[in-house]
Length: 166
Image (tube, rainbow, N blue to C red; front, side, top):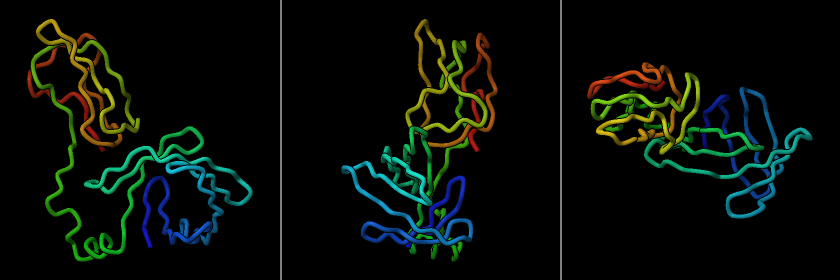
C-alpha cells in the first residue's frame, strides 16, 4: 500500500489492470491500461485520463505526472515511510530548501514565476544580470512559490532573498 498526497490524499493498492483504495475517505476503483513504459490510460467513473510519468525525486519522495496535459507533483509514502512518520522520525536528515537567495550582487532582468505556481527541479525562477552576464537562477527542488520578493529592474545584493517556497 502507498499513501499518495497532493491536492487530495489517497491510499492506493496497485494490482494488475485495476487499482482500488480510498480517495478522501471514499472507495474508488480504477481501470488501468499501460500504453508504454511511462504512459497509462486510466478510466475512473467513465472519465478518461492520460497519465505520463515525468520525474521522480527519491530523496523528497515526490514524483511528477502529466495528467491530461497538466503537471501534478505528488508525494508517495510506502508502509515504511508511514511507520517512520508515526514514530516521529520521518524528516531526520532531510534539508528542504525554503528560499532562493541572490548568489551575487546584480540586477533582476526577469521574474519567471508567480505566487502559487508549482515549479519542478531545474525550472528557471529569476534572471539576474551580474558582471554583464545573464544568469538564470533555477529551482533546486520541486515546490510551490510562496512569495516573490523582487521585481524587474530591482538591484539586489548577495544573499538577498529573491523567492520563498512553501
